[in-house]
Image (tube, rainbow, N blue to C red):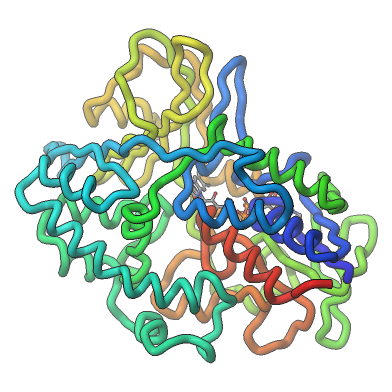
Length: 439
Ligand SMILES: Cc1cc2nc3c(=O)[nH]c(=O)nc-3n(C[C@H](O)[C@H](O)[C@H](O)COP(=O)(O)OP(=O)(O)OC[C@H]3O[C@@H](n4cnc5c(N)ncnc54)[C@H](O)[C@@H]3O)c2cc1C
């Protein structure tokens, strides 16, 4: 079967290599001149920074992708655990405490949190333990299988129907302000409002605790390069600098993709971009809004720098993240700052106001706004904005519009189920490959 995939981010690349491996003739259409979408590297001189993600939960998803499309991941990339993340908590300008929180171990998290305050470890463990059953149910019904209410268990349906928001659940379960900030932070940094998200979205804390937080040695650009190589090995035809303009539809069947200079015929089309970008899908997506990227600043640093973990998070308002796991020349530092909330345009100064002053170390500063990123990738890699539990139903699933109005269309990537983030996007590709099946 001829399959055309629109978008060469992780979602599009992962779908392409999986489908090519099971015998399909795959063409991948990418608007930019390089593959990877949000996964990439920005360089200046001898410095290189990850443009988007720089760590991942659930490394098994990437391992499965590499194994199912050819050689195992270990032969191509080195995936290693991140160092414990330093969390520094603020209420207004008052510092409430800090903790170096390891991932991948419940016991180590309990011990670290108990050092910050009596019984905090037990409180946190009670909060995260409550997600164990939810994860088992959602994994089978929502993450590792194309979502449909028809096959979902009672447990999953109860979660999907629940009006309990993440914000309410966290306030109910966690009495300590620092733990509440810790629980809400993954949503905040992804541009989401915990008041509009279901409580089960808090399970990323459970996943981090149980399966760890991982990074790619050499940066996430190496992941993009390995997948670009895999596209070649699998014989995927890659058209870079080629923007898909719309779907071509005949009698409810998607039969191709409109390009600027003609039509690419297809038996199946996979949309791995924000579907709002394709006029034919606007009727099904007009009520969806994207979650926007944060303000971002890549820094080249010299001089004496503090010893830093891979990730340093300042909680409160503003929320700041410092990612140090980038490539710098010997004796220098390559950090990326991400900021949300009450920030001024100068993230370095905002960080200094929170006790980490590196103003004098900054030699290179590359600032990227949310608008810059959305323009660069023709959409937001953070996927749909949660606006209540109905967001799941409003989002077009891996099998296309739920009313079956478009045959032959599939969706992968951050804008479909199970959502944004590298593991979710990797799972969306596995779901599409499962739906299309072998040639
Ligand atoms: C700043 C930032 C930090 C992040 N940090 C993390 C993290 O640490 N861990 C994590 O798990 N996730 C993180 N994420 C989220 C993660 O990066 C994304 O969810 C994921 O990479 C999205 O992949 P995708 O393929 O769906 O989309 P994208 O990466 O956005 O790729 C879409 C691709 O489609 C192309 N395209 C768009 N329109 C067209 C068209 N009409 N025709 C052809 N091509 C088109 C674009 O050029 C792009 O290459 C982060 C995201 C950002 C922005």
